[in-house]
Amino acid sequence: MSWRIRVEHLSHYQYAGVVDSSYNEARITPMTTPWQMVLDGRVEVEPANQPLRYLDYWGTVVHAFDLQQSHREMTIIGRSVVETNVAAGSGAHLDWTEVHSERVRDDFAELLAPTVYVPIDRRISDIANTMQVEQSPATAGLAAIAWVRDQLTYVAGTTGVHTSAVEAWDGGQGVCQDFAHLALAMVRAMGLPARYCSGYLHPDPEAFVGPTHKGESHAWIEVWTGDWQALDPTIGEPTGERHVLVARGRDYADVSPIKGIFHGGPTAHLDVTVNLTRLG
Image (tube, rainbow, N blue to C red; front, side):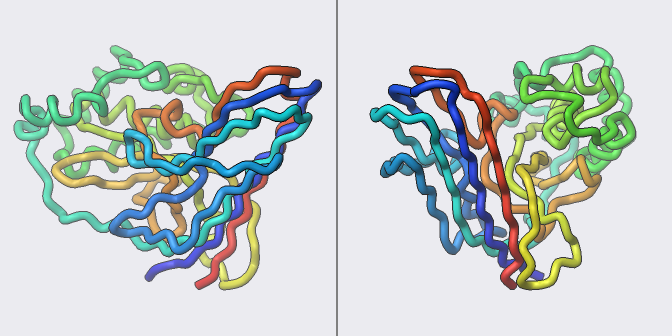
């Protein structure tokens, strides 16, 4: 059954001094995919500005803008309405020999290579080798997210935006970003192409139409085994109608909601508010 969800994402920056100019990118507008239709998607900026909208290398919607007037505050608001369904692939799955073929390794080289957030770790590789023997490619992703849930406890504030998969694993705690990075480390160690996904998760599986819920950005992964499987290691199951996909990439560095540079006083305070409302 499909859901229709309204998303409001507000980021408000207050600076310790006057900012003379800034250059920014916002990735807060959902993507249109075979299982997700964006019915409305807008980004507003204060001080007033008209962002340039384009798709980045990974197909994510980006709103880029620069502010050339002096300012002490900046507000970015993303408003969208999305119709979501369960991500249903073709069901085509390869065997391990096909997944590890030179053609696949070449086609998906960027989604197999290590990154700062998802480095190579010998311990993870050893576990991945065992898991690969016990699983088919089609079931390996589910086994990986089950393993991640056994390794990490969800505790907010124990990691930061720069924490790697290995650092979170060693600490045994993290948030959805860490769950996703550790899952990527495991499936990539098995030779499965995989990408990081960011977006939103409606917090109430039984949500009624009408009430607005406080939410936040969320992260999960997509694993390729001949077709893409979308899996959420934080909740330990495939994604569903509650998930709103915004961005894809190799890791968090490719999908951060707001990034930019500015000239002037440092950021003194940042407020981020996400509101999710089921409309149908």
